[in-house]
Structure formats: C-alpha cells, structure tokens
Image (tube, rainbow, N blue to C red; front, side, top):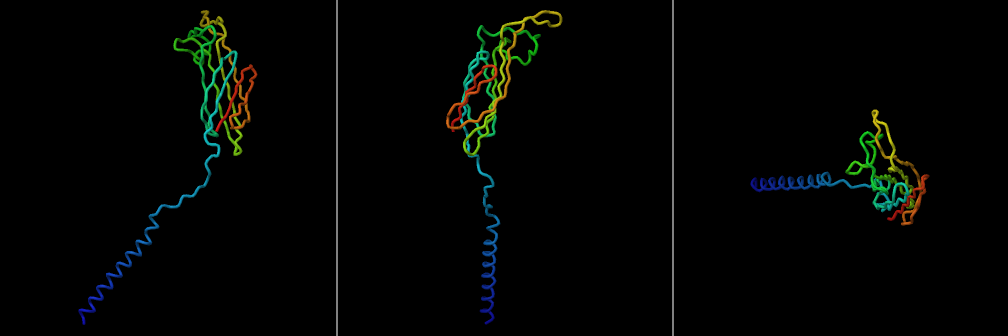
Length: 189
C-alpha cells in the first residue's frame, strides 16, 4: 500500500505543476501581446494636390511649373532667364552685387522667385499665400566705386505678397500684381 500511495502523490504534484505552468502561460501571454492601436487624429483629407503656377511678366519674363504640395507645406519656385538683349556684365563693385542673379559668366540675368503656401479646408477650398519677388537688368548705369566709375546693370525689382481662395478641382485663378505681372494658379487633386 505505501508504494501505491507514493505513486499517486508523485502524479498529483506533476499534474499540479502542469496546471500551474499552463495557467501562468495563459496569464503571461496578454502581457506580451501588442497593445491595441488607437487613432487619435485623422489624416489630412486634402492629400497631395498638384499646383500649376504660370507667371507672365513684361519685365521679368514668362515661366510655368507644376509641383505637388500638401496643405500647410510651402514651396519655392525660382526661374532664371536671359533678358531680351542678353545678360548684362556685372563687375564685383556694383551695388548689392552679392544679391544679384548672375549667370556662369558673372553677368546679370532675370530672376523670378515665387513662394506658394496653401492651406486646404475640409470642403476642398484652398487659401493660398503667394509671395512674389523678381529682379531684372534694365539697361546700364554708371556707378562710382572707390573713386572709379564702373558700368553696372540698372536693376528693376518688384516684391509683393498676395492671398487668394480657390477650389482644388483644376479651375485656374489669376492674380494681377501692382506691376502688371499676372500669376495664374490651378490646383488639382
């Protein structure tokens, strides 16, 4: 009889150990499981939008480019073109030399810079801030530098900031700046 009871006692602890091990695994598994993902904010409903910008200016030339932007992003467009009559030689002693748009030969060319900053509402209407800055040579002028007379480009420049509201369905909207430059913008989802 003692042998028989010792066999049962050995089985009981083994069964108890298996039960305790299984229970601890069942309790431990949720601790290692990934926590559920909760969405705290929704993605922007506007998504990427293709903006086409066209600039038409007698003084600064014509340009066009298309870029893709999201609401809240800004993008800078820069165009350099040779003015009618060619680039104008620009010695280093000219006023504001470091800020002039120069070609590879150091001659002044036309430059148009435009910054586009759209914010798109939930209804798909974009409010766009357009910052325009351009400069171009318009002939030459004599300038005195350290007692010497040098010939520098006569610089024509214009800077303006405008705001407009437009749909994002591809319809174009045109701004007319105070110098006569026209900027046409279209936005397409």
